[in-house]
Length: 313
Image (tube, rainbow, N blue to C red; front, side, top):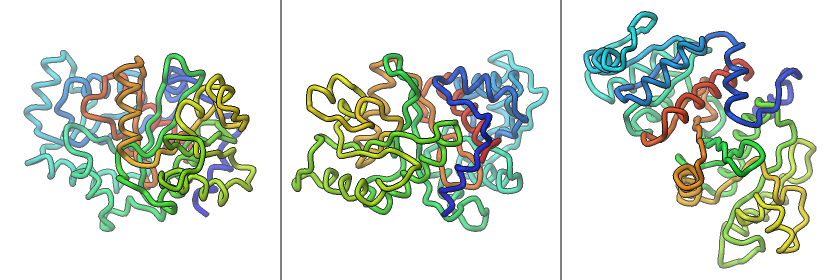
């Protein structure tokens, strides 16, 4: 299976505990072309320029050329080293960006100021060859101040209510990605509202089914259904009498629906001083896909993660 390819990751890869370690590692790698669809936003431009100055990427910007040049001037950024393509509209920028990425295997695609679906419809167009056998899924990477390592969550952006088979593919995509970052036996929690199976809560039934199907492997530890507190807190797990190896130490949270995943992503970001990064997994090239409201740091760290994953996968 394609999701098993991560077992061949180079042994010298470190296990990243925070985003600064990701950036530090990315600076040692080959510079990648970053193709950005409609980058007409201050935070995006600042993040791209910082990544450019660090030597992570070569910026290729696709959008309203006049607005892009005006924004660079306003921010005091030289256009030297930038490749800029003029697009007639946001949709045109999305199409042109995907077309450019399709011609370069090691390039990275980034969503700018446009809706995700506008970009993804071209990503999924067979004419451009970016979609592989896997289903596309979104991964959120969270650096939470009071959690002891990076936390990976899926799916908080793309799949409204994934069924069992779709959740398994989301899990495979996520496993591939986290092992590329040096986490060689990740702890995976299937999230629901409670940690016991309740026939009135379908996500608990599905979690039990997935765990039963996927538990017999040395590739990961998997448990569920788990509530969020049990997955992330040893104290909560102890109080509730749960002794599973994943409890209190999860690397990956697989959410039952986009509502719960997106709510967790945004609640931690805005209320818990969390820095978040976001990518789309399952395509031939990494795709940086953050919320338009995400901070400059979130966009920079997402670019760095994409550079690292491009170098490895």
